[in-house]
Image (tube, rainbow, N blue to C red):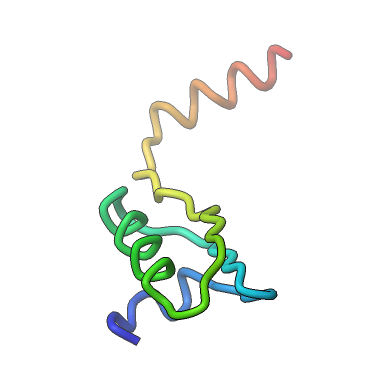
Length: 72
């Protein structure tokens, strides 16, 4: 509720006091912020954070990855 940009990029599930976070964010600080917010929720027993950091698209690196994959 604090930031609407996470509405579609991050999802959460709660089961018996355990929070599971998944999705993608722009930088590690955002990931840490979301984890902290989850822990501050009343009744939380554990938080599992599977949020990934978005990577900038790099055509050169993608071409190298494709070359390596084709060689395998």
